[in-house]
Image 1 (cartoon, rainbow, N blue to C red):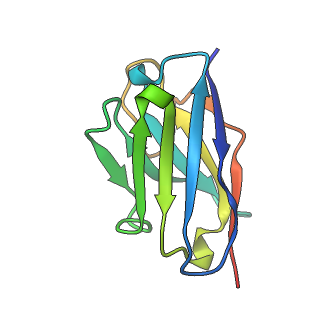
Image 2: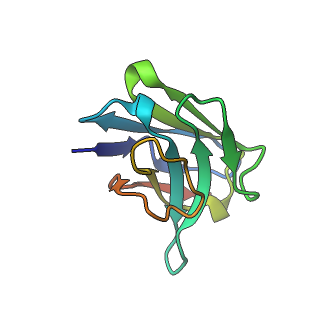
Length: 125
């Protein structure tokens, strides 16, 4: 069974940085694209970033372009989201998720069958 576990969230001041990790178990991450999503209270889930199986292709939401960087280390079965220049509007629960086997990532998360439990990111002074 596919399992994803996020970590690295916390409280940070505006302008600060955090690095989120998404650790996979129960399967080899090489065969899965991975997406990061977030959901703030009272708002719909938002796609943040996607990375292809090889890591050669990435994309970002306009709201985080230039500030966030997604990467992966397949040897460690882990995907990362480096978040710099954080803003209060980045406050949300962040989730990583995987589409079905060998399927591409989707910015909407539609059809994704494996989701982590989420990690809270709070940007506040």
